[in-house]
Length: 308
Image (cartoon, rainbow, N blue to C red; front, top):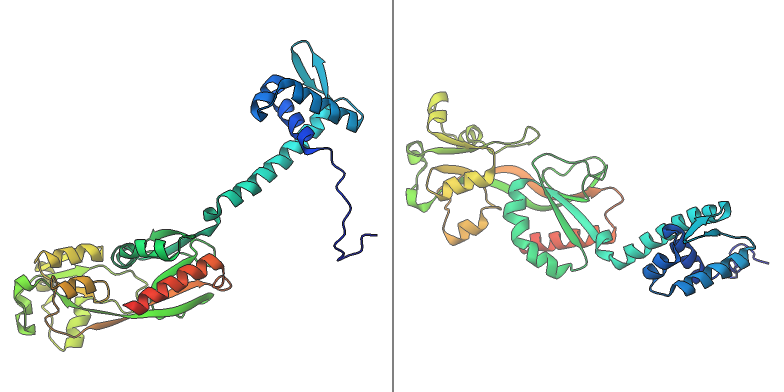
């Protein structure tokens, strides 16, 4: 007796798999010849397997007409069921043959962080996590992690997002940066140079904009029109950085994302203050933090941030 939890189970009452495959192919093509080509056997082998299946089931599955096959009602029912079953089997085997498909992780972050921090590390990621396919979603629009729009996120802010598990990666500060070609060293000389502005998203808690910088520096800002007339404005921080690198003015830029240019001397920070805009956080939806591929990406990002 097969009791609940027993390791013994009754044998499946199925005809031989070879016979079922031969019949399904013949029924799909309505031809023993074309079924034989599909399965790389002879037409007589297909005919033999189908005949054996009919004997096992005790009823005909085909009507054999002149140069043509037609399914009987029983044959049509069996073909429909087998086709569905074989489709499921094929899909399951295909998943095992392509394990990388189930190991894909979508990382979402803003465009500047994606371009300046993530992309330069892609080769390092491939070496560290060869079994995971990283899909990068770069957008300044927040996506819904709980809904599954992405698997993991790097966000700037305070980290207190309902429904998400988060971890601080690094604090973020913005400061005036410019090309050393400008020769800017004193705050008093700032009005002589063009200010480079960058748009911030409406949800930003503490945007690094020039009016705020002047307030925290304790300096009177240029009056309305004066500030706008001697300024460049960009919607993307990467473009603002390119303008600063080209010597077109002074920009408030991320000290984290501009670190390579600061180290090389291509950009300099002539003076402070640096503005606190929160921190970069790693975030996932509650309950997903321990999924193997997500955890692999999480641990790799944490290790990279610690190296910085």
